[in-house]
Length: 109
Image (cartoon, rainbow, N blue to C red; front, side, top):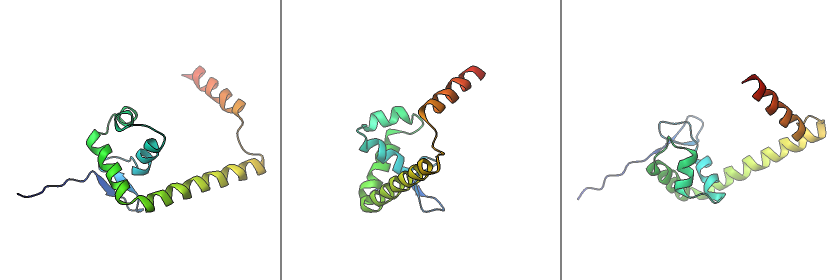
């Protein structure tokens, strides 16, 4: 018997794992799972992905867990650094400003 495997994950030119044929990063699917979503719930958020693609992305994560966990940590630290810099510079957008922009966008639609 011959085993046939099919991967739904490719590595882009920047070294990031993506779901093949999409621009969806494996790390995004993993973060959804870390936030408590099931594969079916993730599929609802990414309806263009099949459950096989989602499970393949999660399998890739488990095969490369340390590497991807480190990337998630780096991204979280970078986001926090940028947030703190924006606060220090007085350029962080307030909730009121975000709500105003949302209202204005709704008026123009």
